[in-house]
Length: 108
Image 1 (cartoon, rainbow, N blue to C red):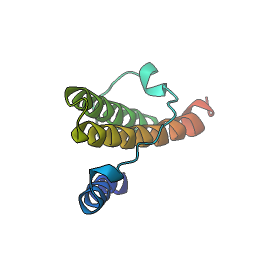
Image 2 (tube, one colour):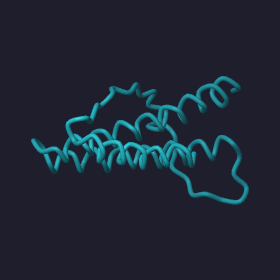
Image 3 (cartoon, one colour):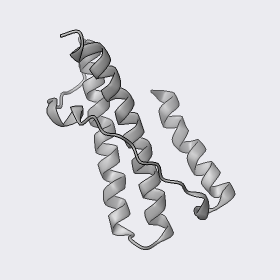
Image 4 (cartoon, rainbow, N blue to C red):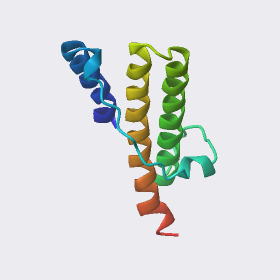
């Protein structure tokens, strides 16, 4: 999980080195699992399913934040930067949703 977040630093460093025109925004699939699970608070007794739910919800919120920020800067270079970051968060969310699908939903 930590490596995913470090990826943001790498993305921003690459953009700084290559310029805002280098931003490529990928389209990311959405399993929408996070839409159907209840948000929860972390506890000491969390199991794997709980951890994945918290992770999905955090990525979902981060994606929404960046998407909302992009809407505030429509038509600017900053819009694309926030769209790129939103797409990165969507990628993270997809990873957690895939793990949830593979290890929680399929086991039940």
